[in-house]
Image (cartoon, rainbow over all chains, first blue to last red; front, side):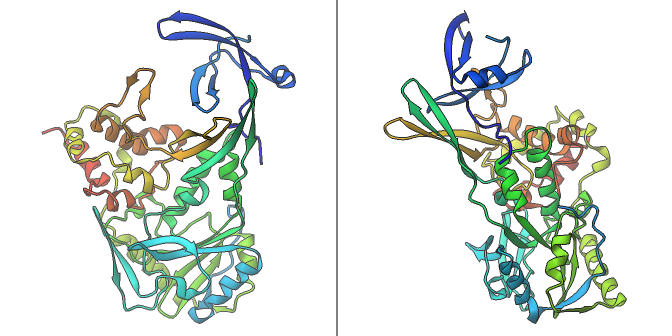
Length: 65
Length: 373
């Protein structure tokens, strides 16, 4: 198949900051070092955050962590 | 599909008694052959082995909120215009597992599930459905990241169109300029008459199949007669959309009282979006195993008429049926043009026929374009 944008890469949450009662900032580290190295994004870019067995939610990337 | 650059040879005559040759030629090339088959009071795409599997002796009656099959004395193979299915389920699966995720200690791995596809030939595709497929191709395959699940199914399709010589009251393809004659996107096309078909290739792949069939020269007169029958089918259509006023007039009708009237009838059942050849909303569900060590990441069709479609972070942007109907119609006929450069409607009429209360979008648009009373 061609590149599959549905593929999911594991990441560890290394820091969680409560910004307000219902907004948090998460700092994350991709667990695959090669993927981490090649991973690029623009500030504000749309991304999905997936929790094992729980489904996906959309969020916006702010800065490299 | 290479029909854009393909120069089609003159249509030929293909006798009904030789139709089995077409099925055999496709099967010899490894195609699974699908056609319209009687099922649950309508037709569905199902595998066919012989022409007798086609719905001979039946025709469909469609009008707002009503679909009925009736006996028909004709021996034609394709007298049923269409059923609830467009080509959509064949490329954009109603439910499919995209990934299987396995948990390992504090992390997990994701495995792609490749669609189980094989070359598939579809006989009896209508012009409106080719137009719908072209729209879905743009949604799923244009851009940097084509959808691999859709793409794999799409590349395996061989499409045999049947030009319409009979319209039902829900049809308005002529108004949308998508039919009744298949213009592009097919490999072979057929125009059915009582004893035979005019058959035409629309691609190199189609021509290779056509060359294996016993055909004869079609006279100019016969070709003209068939064109006239297709034109008469277009002329018989009574519904239309005022396309010259779209998209602007629909945006301007945002606060029209007609939305309340249609919302009072609409059941938010999602039928219109399920049968629509172009609606593409979907959600992704997680189906975890009982021990929670594995999860199936599964894509399922969704609809903008469901209560939670407009739910984002504590707020439902479309809490009422009025919000949802307005969103659907305005996207389909107006903002789709801004988004994709074409209307999201191909005039197949399925949303009219399969609406349980017979809401007719052409009637709604006409009312919305009138000054509020």
